[in-house]
Structures are given as C-alpha cells and as structure tokens.
Amino acid sequence: MNFYRCTNCNEISINMFNNNSKMLCCKNEMEELKTNTFLEEIDHHLIQVRKIGNFVTITIGKDEHPMLHVHYISWVILKTDKGIQYKYLNVGDTPIVDFLVGEDEEIINVFAYCTLHLLWSLN
Ligand SMILES: [Fe+2]
Image (cartoon, rainbow, N blue to C red; front, side):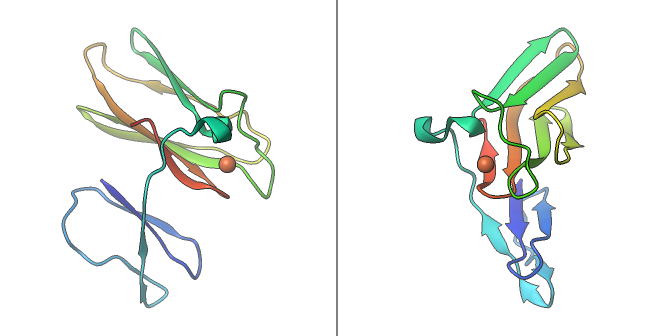
C-alpha cells in the first residue's frame, strides 16, 4: 500500500496493490509519500492502538495531536490481515477513532495523515 500526494492541489491517492502504475493529478505525476514513524521529539504523532474484543481504538499523540485549522489529523487508516478501513477527522474533533474488526483479525499497520507533518505509521 503506497501513498501519493499532488504537489499542486494536495490531493492524496492510495495505490492499494503496489503495482507500478503512475499516479497522476493536475496533469502531473504525484509524489510518493514516505511514512514517518514515531520520533520522541514529535510525540504528538505517536499512534496508540487499543484492541478489546472486536473494538479497536486509535489515539494519535502521546498528548492528543492538535486539531486546528492549520494543523490537524485528517484521516486514519487501519490495515489488518482482512483489509483496510478508514475514518475521516475534522478540525475540532478529538484525534481518536474507533473501528470494528473481527475478533481474530490481526492489525498489520495504522496510518495517520497530518496536514502539516504528512504521513505517519505505527510501524
Ligand atoms: Fe502534526
């Protein structure tokens, strides 16, 4: 699963199957987004996952990530061994999302997109 961003309009696209298709937007090739993982000095991007039975709760930030107009988490993707789910967040929301999964469903990764610091992942 690869992520791409248009440097003109900031549109994000996901290439689900890692084929080598060129991702185009605004008549230009989109740039691939590299995922950042947790850095202690930027602890508001720490992805915390709690799974109890069928319920998965994901919190972004050791202290909750800012959710201001100029800087917020706009979406979170949960990738499991069964597929992906995503949730949108808006300015003013709490950076916490809930997902419903099968009890035997294994969490593979979590991605969170910060409008200022771009793409973060659990691993
Ligand atoms: Fe951020």
